Length: 506
Image (tube, rainbow, N blue to C red; front, side):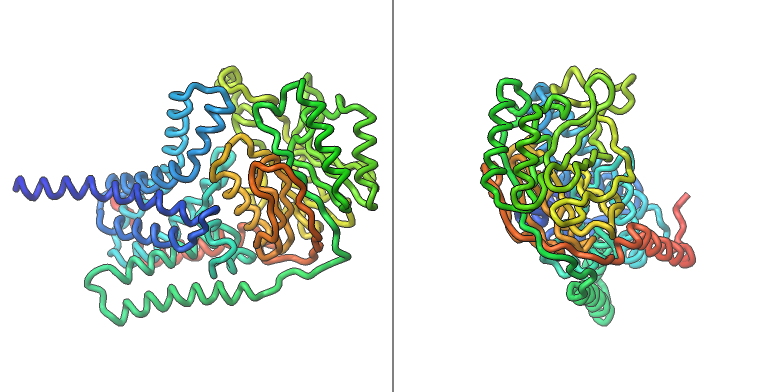
């Protein structure tokens, strides 16, 4: 009896450890490594382990361990922003990062706990319930408490995996769901005591899903419209600890003006808050200089800077200067504790701990329209906004091209810039539009409608990325339906589970 208890205890410790390592391994599927089969294999391993437990508590522990490994390996760059640039004590930044990753790990933990509560046999629980629960958990993570959809598994499949073909139809959450379904089929096929015929059926179904995605990659959803536009995307590489120093402002302004003057393009794009002063404080002579540079090739210049008043309301914005009448876009989806403080009466003390300039932006209007500049209808989004696919399509199908301006200097030389660029690749694929990225320290890039990086500047270098872009018209299914399509699929899937008699244990 003692030996049996000891073996059970070792197994109870081993499974969470394996889950932790499997979660960390899945991060290799994302940029910059782009080993897209790894998340599929990691999830199949997780699902196989969840089949071996029968209690909600054990399912919760294994799911939590996988999630903790996944997020600690994938988003630990948050520590850099808190400690190096936010001024937080190292121990406190480490604790905050661990707590943040632990909260994110609750989503896969919830999947593990819920699937263990079903009374049905292992096969339907694995093949039917787990993919649905996984997809729903990622969707929930994308909007609960303003949302943090970073590292949704679907992103790992862009642009090389056959599953990327599902993105223009079902969006990133649809790709995650199909990946989870394939992972479940693989886990089921290697489970002991399966009849050979059924193993072949499971592997054939998984292969069919991959072939279907590959076939969809050949579908052309949008078409070119208008003449090509020459572009120049400027990467200033201004260190974050110098960006807001008053004695460095003039050098920053002059540096961007020189880069713009040397960029023969119809559309010149500067990064987020590239001009580190309020629009009202921008010298008129400098503003006129930028407008002249925008006009020099019959086009326009987009510059990021704060607008409004620090005494009332101020916005994270971009303004256009050049041939077209001046236009602007102000950021709508702000980052909690980075750009605004939620529940100030409770969390206001955070401002004194994090030395973040301009940490209380106001939200821009959600119904802003594309900017008519540089011969294109430009849908602008700022930094974190392009991780929310359904928000990006608000300006479609009117927009012909997408532009993201960012400042990821907060996260140092980490995976963050590459992961963020991969999410821009997903947005291009979902919308059937080219995506331009102008960033302070990287990854400044030109992305085609298939989600491929056509060109980019190395991170932490100063330079201008030039190229020619094509505007596109039309709508992908995702532009028409947004996340409603995958929610409908899940609704029908859930109805099938209900009709099959799935019940939770009391």
